[in-house]
Amino acid sequence: MNRRDILIEAVAEAERLHQERNDQETISAVGGGVDVFGTITDLSVPLVFRPLEGLLGVFVPRPEPGIMITTQRSLAIQRFTAAHELGHFSLHHEGSLDDESILRRSPFGTTGYDGQEAAADAFAANYLMADWVFESHLIRQGWSAESLDDPRNAYQLALRIGVSYEAVCRSLAQKEVIQKDTLQKHLATTPKKIKQELLGDHPMENWYPDVWVLTDRDEGTRIQGGPKDVFLIHLKEDSGAGYIWNIDQLEASGFAVVADERMIAPETEQVGGPVERILVAASPSERAGKLDLAQARPWDPFSVSDHFTLDYDLFGRESGRSRIERKRMVAAA
Image (tube, rainbow, N blue to C red; front, side, top):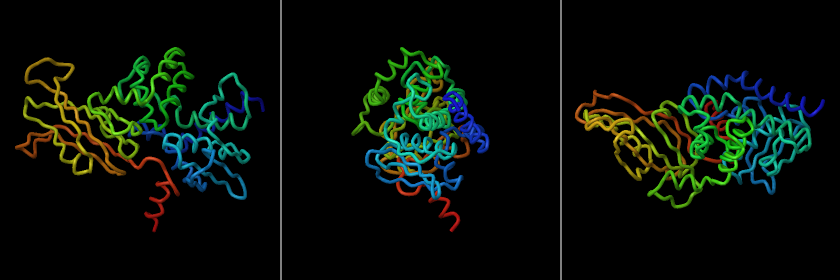
């Protein structure tokens, strides 16, 4: 089998798994990224997270297939590594010890390297960043291809898909959604700089956590982040008619409200018209749950005019057994 056929087979296998698990329907309905850890668990492949010296992941085919992922990198890197190792398993490869080179190389580039590794790279890229994954999030957010010329939007897309900012930028360029000069501009714009621009006068203690920009377009979705992530929540508020967003549930869920501001909504200059409520909230620790904010007249609890809901998982990187496997073990006990 030549290299082209090897890569075609890898991409086809990624799509076969998507169809088998109804991934496109799930992401279209609730957002988020492809559940690579859940896929590995459903395939009954042992998956563990351990400190690995000099390696990101390991695939062992015999005597029984197994996958090991480092605990020393971010959740986004863990997810890509897991997809790479899943590719080895799904394509019936020999064992593999995978270092950081899997983050830098492109199976679709001009530089040739080992066919097995190229196939696993192609599988991982198309499993986590299939065309329809991008399209689903662009439609939900109301973004065009031109919107992704803004590195801030590319960063927000990466958070929602659950891969690194660089991986999203390179994939967008490979799919010709952005031009090569735009790719270079994006790569020269670090995530730290983007976070600083987003937060403005609200600096973070350090710049490792992510900064999510959430709007009514994220209503009913799910997000997976890390402890200490920061959220810029933009909500239209009809305060002129007495309707106010109640943020008590935000604080009751353990989020710290760093700032609470109101601005004239961009689409109107009318006095007494809708305003934009901008909340800056931070997660001080690991947590998961459902956020449900209601807009109502404070004196009338039955006057709810709108809700903003989302499911969140802010436990960050995995360690030991995957969280989804532990959750299923508890449910089965």
